[in-house]
Every structure is written in C-alpha cells, then in structure tokens.
Length: 285
Ligand SMILES: NC(=O)c1ccc[n+]([C@@H]2O[C@H](COP(=O)([O-])OP(=O)(O)OC[C@H]3O[C@@H](n4cnc5c(N)ncnc54)[C@H](OP(=O)(O)O)[C@@H]3O)[C@@H](O)[C@H]2O)c1
Image (cartoon, rainbow, N blue to C red; front, top):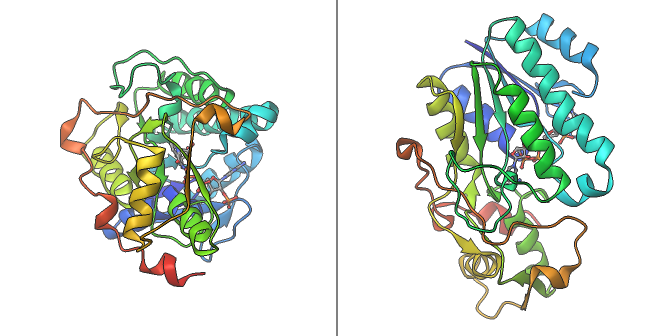
C-alpha cells in the first residue's frame, strides 16, 4: 500500500515513515521548511498543492502529523493556526473522503482543559487555548468521515538531536550550564515518538477508527520529567529551578492536571524514557 505522510519532516512524521517502511509499506513524506532527502515539498495551506500531490501520488492512506504545534505561536497568530491546524487537515480529509481512502490525523491532549486528567477517549473536550480549540475543530470535521482515525498523543519526545525534541532542548541547556525552569504544577503523560508511531501503525493496520489516545506509560509533572531526563543524561547536580506554570507568563494557557489514558489498552505504549538511547543527543552538540 502507498502512504502519504503530510509533515514527514517532523518529529512524529519521521518516526511514522520509519514504522511504515519497517512494515513493508510504500511511503511518500512531505516537508515544509525542513527539506528531507526523498521527501516532497507541500504547504497544506494551499488547496491546489494538496490536490496536485494527491493526484500525483495516488495514496491508499493519508497520514497528517503535519501541524503548527507551537501552542504560544498559535495563541498570537490565530490566522496561521487556523490555516495550518484546521483548514489544511480538513482539506486533506475532504480529499481522502472523495477518494474513499482513510485518513489518520494527529490531534493533541490539549483538547482537554486539564482540570481533571488523565482523560479517556470518551471524555468531553474543553480546550482552553487557540491551539486546542483548533485541534477540536479539525477533529470534529474529520470524524464526520467514518474512515478517519484521530490519534491524540501528549508531550512527545524522541532520540533526535533536534530542537523540536524537548529532551534535546533540556540536554542543551544543562550542557551549557544554564538553569532549566520546570513547573511542578503541570502534569502530563510523556510520549516517545517511536512507540507512538509503532502503535499508530498497529491501530491503522488493525482497522481501528475513531479517537485513540496513544501515550507513554507514566504521568509526570514537568519538574519530575526534567529531573528524570537530567538523571538519565548523567547530571548529578542539574540546575533546575522549580516554578509554577503561572510564573512563566506564557501566551497560551496550559492544561495543568492533564494527561491521557486509553480505553484501547491493546495499544498502550510501554516504552519509558529509560528505554531510549540518548547517546546521540549528548554527542550531537
Ligand atoms: N510535540 C508534542 O509534544 C505534541 C503533543 C501532542 C500532540 N502533538 C501533535 O502531534 C503532531 C506531530 O507533532 P510533532 O511533534 O511531530 O511536530 P513537528 O516536529 O513540529 O512537525 C510538524 C510537521 O508539520 C510540518 N508542517 C508545518 N506547517 C505545515 C504546513 N503549512 N503544511 C505542511 N506541513 C507543515 C512541518 O514541516 P517542516 O518541519 O518541514 O516545516 C513538520 O513536518 C502534531 O499534530 C501536533 O499537534 C504534538
């Protein structure tokens, strides 16, 4: 089968392509501003470009990990967020439906308000910032088509020495001797991109449709997470400053008592932070 991965240059997109190739699938990935050898350019804000690429590639499945996941940027540039996080995925969904092929869309735990986490697939959404509101809009439109799988991960990390990976960002700060601020009042379920991609492919191949929460096995505060990363990277006395999210004066509100849990336990991800090999991160500076 042939797969089109929109956002193949991203953290999740690149892991997805690896997972699909390992399952002997044919994959074409797309990038926007970070060219990847073998992938093709696509800006999903341009509906003509979307139609052209689908016409050329003739995919059997469309995957959409592509997004503007910078929550604060979405809050200050709502038009950009609407174009990338709402209209782009919906245009792809309409096209998939017209061709009677499935679409797998990557949403977020930010569809919830973080009053009472962790949340299950069946819990009602209540986003508290633009990014989450736009994810809900896209989800609702795409779920009108029965051949849609909506995957919700949370706090994604990877082994890549790339600033989009927060393990790398924390490693870089610690290595420079900088103090890392970490909130002790924000809880979530960190998710490895590798396990996420493998379970997403399992779910799609298994014919799962509708909403699926795919997250790592632990629920941690940001402070606990940063301390664990520092420990794994070998920092005995890391400079960590304990803060509350409110102290950070961020443009977008964060869900505090957040995180996800799944009703479909067969797809639970068991990979923990300690199971990943972060040597590449330490030597990639
Ligand atoms: N990161 C997290 O912690 C997290 C948590 C929960 C949910 N999610 C969701 O999971 C999905 C994947 O996130 P990620 O961490 O892999 O994000 P990422 O690393 O930032 O990747 C985003 C991808 O989208 C592409 N893209 C951006 N704007 C585009 C546009 N206008 N047209 C086409 N492609 C565009 C980017 O291309 P270039 O890089 O080439 O510009 C990149 O390939 C997203 O839907 C995100 O909202 C992420």
